[in-house]
Amino acid sequence: MTRLRSGAVTAAVIVLAVAGCTIQQTEGSSGPAQTGGGGAALTAAESLTVKGRAPKTGYSRERFGSAWADTDSNSCDTRDDILKRDLEEVRFTRGTCKVSYGLLDPDPYSGKDVTYRRGRSQVDIDHVVALSDAWQKGAKYWEPSKRIALANDPLNLIAVDASTNRGKGDGDTATWLPPNKAYRCPYVAAQVAVKRKYGLWVTAAEKAAMEKVLRTCPNQKLPTGGNPTEAPERFSAH
Image 1 (cartoon, rainbow, N blue to C red):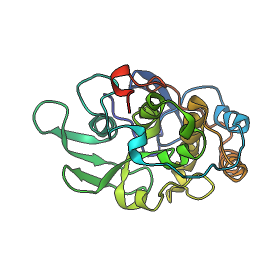
Image 2 (cartoon, rainbow, N blue to C red):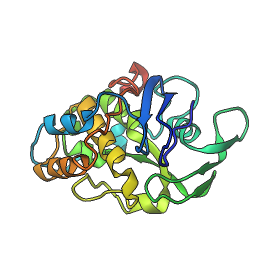
Image 3 (cartoon, rainbow, N blue to C red):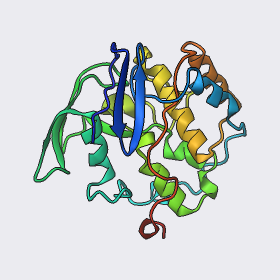
Image 4 (cartoon, rainbow, N blue to C red):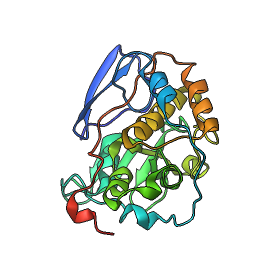
């Protein structure tokens, strides 16, 4: 898979193919590359359905399937797919699946360089829309196959500095944003894209926070692509 740069991009346009989708970054943007017309992220945020947060009752990670299932059937688990996509100078332990080493150069959330070594905890794979947040905003009522798809969709996943990510918890845009201010527009655009793709709602405070951030970058594009919104049948029983 092609690595997705997280730092500021100075080239006019970089086109990459990630997880079977074409994505694009424009000058002055950072983080996951984007597609769509100018202002697409703000327009999409404005269109999201607003409801109150449902109770967290019944939530567990297991409701979204076993961690890092190979839902794209490429014989590598989802975690290693994202490490291969997002890290530089990647090294493997046997074959081309198990990533043993790589660099976040830089980490999108903190802006600092982070070294990944397998078995240590310097790098997390973050769910941009936290699974607990998704549970409280629609996923509770889904079929298992759709929850499994969300948990393993590259559109909703990014390799980040573990210590910074632990401060996020299951926060939404209203309660947490990356300390790296240069990455906030791409981060919020990614949350909007995931919620739009999966039909998740937002709270009034969350929508207001999304729009506030995206109005500072009115040309921010909207990420698209990723995996289908239902996991293959073999993963669906839960």
